[in-house]
Amino acid sequence: MTGGMSSDEFRRYGKELIDWVADYYEKVESLPVTPTVQPGAIRALLPPNAPEGPEPFAEIIEDLDRVVMPGITHWQSPNWFAYFPGDSSFPAILGELVSAGLAQQGMLWSTSPATTEIESHMMDWLVDLLGLPEAWKTTGPGGGVIQMSASDSTHTALVVARQLAQQSTSLDNIVAYASSQAHSSIEKGARVAGYRHFRAIGVDDHFAMRPDLLVEAIISDRRAGLLPAFVCSAVGTTGTTAVDPVRAIGEIARSEGMWHHVDAAYAGSAMICPEFRIHQDGLELADSYVFNPHKWMFVNFDASAFYVADRRPLIETLSILPPYLQDAASQSGAVIDYRDWHVPLGRRFRALKLWFTLRSYGAEGIRTKIREHVAAARSLTAQLEGDARFELVAPTLFALVSFRHVDGDPPTDRLAARVNESGRAYLTASKLPGGSSFIRISIGQTNTTQHHVDELWTLIDEMADPA
Ligand SMILES: *Cc1c(COP(=O)(O)O)cnc(C)c1O
Image (cartoon, rainbow, N blue to C red):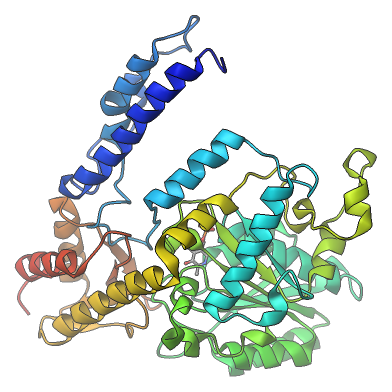
């Protein structure tokens, strides 16, 4: 008996819920991608107070269809083309199930040796799979850790960079840099970490950071008595998947003594295919790196892979040792205590879902999926390029297609609204740096195939205004 349920009931309802989830995946493609509920509609279906007595579990399951499903946005529909993917897979879901079942707290090696060691091993596997620098392995000077999100990973990098910079100046003088197209998590992380100065550096025609403008900003900040401490390169910006010149930025960071963080939250997954690694040239000049297996590597949220080239400054910055967290294994220096690698103390067994996914697909299975998505994105790109009504606004480097209607904002906005209102696909209407509208089509849901992208093209073709 755990939580008022016998293990027989747990078996029965557990199997029922697995069926329920499997049924969901079988039908999700036919559902409108976004729900039509009004704000407050889901809460209105819930009783005002928690139940005093136990309720039959069968009724709880029934309420999934009655209460929950009307308010679900179908990120796992193969017709999902919005934002970036937030993928799942059956092996990853089963990994989550086992993780919940074992309910580990892997804050120290000794509080769950398997949680720590499988996590370190998965992070090392990914170094080889993605062609990352060998030194980033936990068997070398660096190491990887699973964090909740890229935002947490970037925040952690900012904190370490701040700590290093504070050895030579006061917090008031420390500056962080990223391109004007960098993800909002960089500026937010800098704010949370206490930076008073954040500089958004200008970009070129392809929305990649201009190193000459970075140098100008650094010179002007130094003249003002400030200390450049942190710079972020993006490999695949959120807006248009632009790739900053990682090597050039890395060389500037080295010569300035700055921390260089690389944000590959989305595009990092593509590096499992060697043909994309040209976009991460210069990574050996990075001090830290993040990519999200929970975006495009078929692992359920949350699983953000954060690496440092040298783990010592990270651990020195975040390690605080109250007596109740000291033990022989930690003091031996032979183990990793991941509590010192991020803000939270408690941590769940997230490596299981990564382990299950990497083993079930095999690296080749993941490569095949990513290449299918990229091929579908390129075919859609070719269709848009061949049609006088449309123009691309950025190259299709991975599986994000960015385009607009040649007649400007109103027909571009109308097209996005019509597609989304149809419920047959869901894409994102966005704005370029100059303020003009464009449409982002992100191809990468686990089950999206060429067929779904062909259907999306049919919708676009039917719904676009003439040129
Ligand atoms: C999605 C994204 C992020 C934020 O990811 P979270 O894991 O949700 O914090 C950061 N940077 C880039 C480039 C992204 O695409």
